[in-house]
Amino acid sequence: MSAQPATTAASSETIVSIEGLRKSFGEVEVLRGVDLRVGKGEAVVIVGSSGSGKSTCLRCINRLEEPTAGTIRVGGQEVTGPKVDLNLLRRRIGMVFQGIHLYPHKTALGNVTLALRKVVGLGKDEAEHKARHHLEVVGLAHKADSYPAELSGGQQQRVGIARAMALEPQVMLFDEPTSALDPELVGEVLNVMVRTKEMGMTMIVVTHEMKFARDVADRVVFMDHGAILAEGTPQEILINPQHQRIRDFVMRSHS
Amino acid sequence: MDQIVRYFFDFQLMSAYWPDILRGFLITVQMSILTVVIGIPLGLVLAVLRLYGIRPLNWLIIFYIDFFRSIPQLVLIVLAYFALPYFGLVLEPFTATVLALAIVLSAFAEEIFWAGINAVSKGQWEAGRSTGLSFTKTLAYIILPQVVRISIPPLTNRAIGISKGTTLGSVVAVPELLNVTSSIQSNVANPTALTVGALLFLLLFLPFVRFTRWLEHAYSHPRS
Image 1 (tube, each protein chain N blue to C red):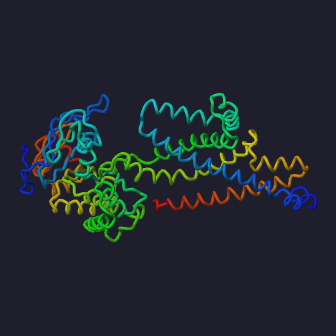
Image 2 (cartoon, rainbow over the protein chains, first blue to last red):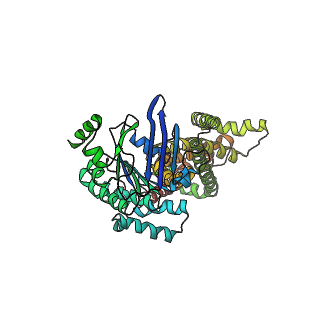
Image 3 (tube, rainbow over the protein chains, first blue to last red):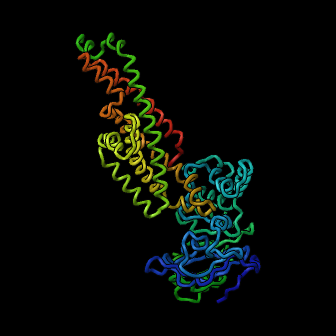
């Protein structure tokens, strides 16, 4: 199988590199040596059964989970180093959660401006200007003053994307961004993600949306029992899978 | 009916003793406000310190809150006034009472804030931290505003309950409202002063309750 980025969208510059990543929760080894490189502008989709370690792998990249062993670099800087400034680093790694996790006491605008003001240090006007721009990109400029509870799940997740994108990260991590949504709301979120990709953002996406993986991914990574079983183009992995394990998975996903 | 008026609403008596009653009332107001203003912020500080999870400090905090929630306030006031002098700390009756009540309130407030902090989902922390906010900034801007809102009703209950404990100050001869009014009652064999005292307690706590409702509203946000 090929480890090369499959499309021209991806340049040779590596944004994320993961080497020998291991993670144990107590006795349970969830990641058993993962190696992955993601080029600038590349969209990598990680698929696999639940419990295969996809989310944990993603969460190690910004150290929401503490890796047990291995090296992770983002933009050439070591994430796993002992003296790394985690807050500075996380600013450059956007994350979108399955549970969305908007701040319920803040409006859509307030959700997006918070880090711009308190992390980047922008003034009120500048932060709001920037936040409105990013809400517009996700099609929610008109909802800037709405509270999360007043938005649909799909709208909430789009605010979640705007919140992360506003910091102009080097890479966006999507952790099952549509899994908690009603089926009819999934499309609007996926559309925003396609748009994010078209804007040249480097993306790592954990998802069960096979259509998204087939249509949007530059590369698909199949994880199984805490390791990468195969990676390649969507064609290679999802349409003509070589492994029986993956064939079974793809079959189940279609049903 | 005449009897009731004579016993509980003797206006002559009221006007005669009004200056004394008012003085007692003002002392009660001062003690209540000080208890709340010291006790609740101290509880918040303890809850936040506990959150940082420094092992020996946490044991101390947990011992503190368990101890002061268990011990009767009356005993604590008596200890503060009569026992502390043996350790070289002589307190005015007023100060001893406020100190004891504020400490008890802080212990209860800590538990309320702690429960509130735990009620905010872990995802809120992760969302904040993932944008580069530090632990402290995430706490200040994301977690605590949500905690304060859910903590206001139980804190109000506790604050009122413990502020009423200012009446216990009479055991160390604080001339607070109940002390004054019940003395008058004994002296003149008429409970009118107590009636006035009760009305003044209402006058003190009703605005306080209204204020906390307003506070609750100020911190509210639409919820699904």
